[in-house]
Image 1: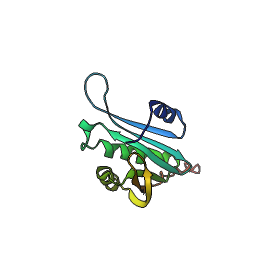
Image 2 (image 1 turned 180 degrees about the horizontal axis):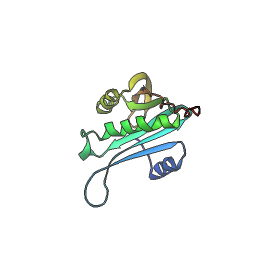
Image 3 (image 1 turned 90 degrees about the vertical axis):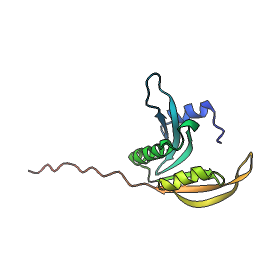
Amino acid sequence: MAQWTAGDYRNLATDSLGLLLVAELDRMGPPAVAGFAAFHHLLDEAELRNIAVDPAQRRKGVGRELVAEGRRRLPELGVSRIFLEVRASNLAAQRLYLSTGFRILSRRREYYRDPPEDALIFTMELASPPEVSAPDRNP
């Protein structure tokens, strides 16, 4: 699991290059978080830095919808490719990423610590947002 602090999330949420998506449960009463995805972008590339789903909400499409929302929003920011790292042993996450359009790009040996483990690097190409043409001013 990523070692993120509350301050890390606050910084990303206020960073103009950050995109923090939150999935809330649709229920009566105060909202409850079902999951979140944290992206950071620079120029035409973004990194999915962290994604988490409440254990009680897993396998209900929350992670898939968070990835899909990132796919919808990031091209509007000029992003054409997303990268992420995942532990080689995290098969559930790998299945999610592969099923949402990511592909494995490479492996980083002993990328993770505590415990040491390889990372798989995934990437996804995004479609560019449709270009808006200026209206024809000639009648």
